[in-house]
Length: 360
Ligand SMILES: Nc1ncnc2c1ncn2[C@@H]1O[C@H](COP(=O)(O)OP(=O)(O)OP(=O)(O)O)[C@@H](O)[C@H]1O
Image: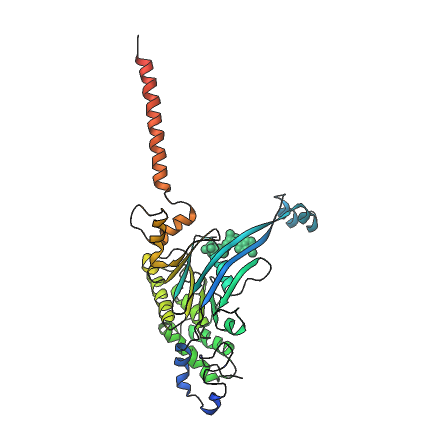
């Protein structure tokens, strides 16, 4: 079995050849730094990605209530409903490169999480269309093993400390070829890499038990995925619920991971302008369609070139949200309508006044 050195090729071989580890036993002290610094670069391409689901629309609104109350069998309800297809994603094309952060932006319900699931190969079934390529090939098991996915709702044991969580996880997730000591060292190294040393002995906690802060909790979730030294790290809204300083610190961490050659794809609901300028590429979604894909620094220029620009300097991410929500120019249009109405009202009122006061 090939050793898990963090420098494996996607075929599972060490670049030096599979037998090198036998000839040159590794120094365990080198292992964590080797695991975290070395990375097999993954270029991710997504071409014309689409996703459709079948939604059953029920003609009788009370059917659920009737089922709960036990009136009428289930098959009657399904026969009364008709199945409709709903497009969640459509025609999304772009790429994410090693050493870069691709930010997926868009309002709530625009399809960010669905898109990230598609990238991570988690969307199964007939509804998925399009092509996902990792280094110009369809992602195989090795690429999947090198992909870390940080979900929106992190699931962690509330009673374990940060250190216990990560050691427990590293014992479970790292290959058998590593000793218990080595796995612990990897966990310790990830703790320091993600700035969790200060809180390593604090319990995770939950809404009933006080534990680490929201930002630290997110870091633990990222650390959880960092244990396998992923080349591709996908994060679903990692900054949700964080204040702007904590969010900034977290994106700085992502930035430093990207600089080590990892490919980072992250969705974000409403990043501040400080965060926005740290994104290399941006994909703006609106109702499952791509409004913009390209360099973050060129997005405003693009929208200006097609006739959309904010009336005053504003955070690009806020502007894109306005565009995606269809509220762009709402204020000025609303004011114009109000002025017109006021003029018409004044005109009618003055005509009426003239007709009542005019005596021939
Ligand atoms: N399997 C499914 N069946 C029906 N509708 C779905 C399914 N998956 C996603 N949707 C719908 O697709 C839309 C996009 O969902 P998604 O979770 O990707 O949005 P999002 O941009 O991540 O939103 P948020 O920022 O609130 O997390 C939503 O309206 C959701 O209800």
